[in-house]
Image (tube, rainbow, N blue to C red; front, side, top):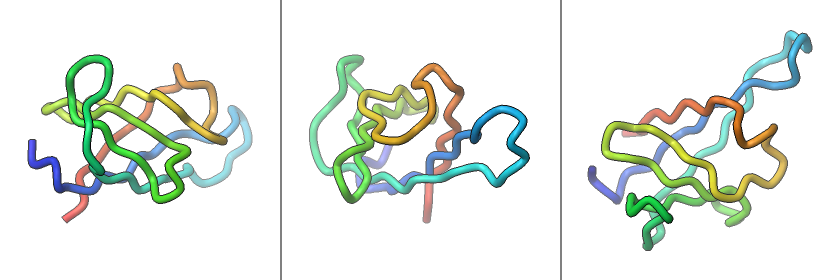
Length: 78
């Protein structure tokens, strides 16, 4: 994985709320997560996520995201 990439995380809002999905942009600022994959953070540093080479995202810190067990979709940005 190119660790210079930025990723957009997409996660659902509250169940039954019928609102747009929330997103956060994260980028590699150095370091690795507990599973050994690149660690990505948002601009504020409040959202930290480890993203595997296959694009699987593991939340480490999540500010105002929903429950960290909620499925998170990670998509690379150009």
